[in-house]
Length: 332
Image (tube, rainbow, N blue to C red):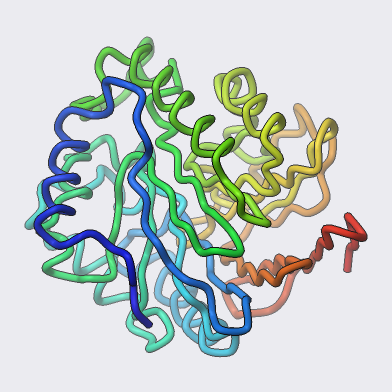
């Protein structure tokens, strides 16, 4: 499948280097990638997060089922919700962990397509800039990771947001060392990230709008809600007709309905190691589905309908939910 509209390799390299080293210091249009939907106007993709463990903790088993479902659905691409490489990201753009945890694990034919990825907090523990390096695209051309960017798939637009710099605890109570190059001063960085997202959302004419970040806005898993995102990001999503917020961070699968808008909070952070029984019921308002095991999620989009399906490590369907723009909600 082609990736039409992508910048020339030289331009993309320069863009990646500029963003990774210096960040966005002024409000500007987010990097944008064109991915035309199929001739029938549909779009299908998989979502997985918190996965990179060299095939261990059932990562390989989840990858196998992703390949099977990906073939059945004839997917266009894969979305990674971050924490791409454990435990401490990559050591550089020649770190063998990239091949051992990505290239050598996701080998199915259906998964040989673009992987659009955001950074997670574990990625920031290593060389975060390395994950955005053009060198990784030379090793495996599927890989595309930036801090924040937009994928235009015609029927839907996906807005990827770098959420780790929003979490104040990483700065005031650091248990680990983080690679903050390109995000200091943090207040300026997060302010512009929100502004750039807001501008992009307001300009969007897509039928479906999806925002992707690593940290949950709403979750009943180990980490729970992310207060900084509830305060600063959620109002922007609610004001701009966003349909879905997709994230990882909590090693589980879940769907939560917003109580003030049609937004569905979808967690897919179960790509390898899961946390059985680790549930925080601090805020279970709107909780529709929760699973504390390994798995992934599929998204199938048509002009008027979306179907979300959660699968476990054996490929069993755990939860299926559909939405129609006309009928609004339909649970299965």
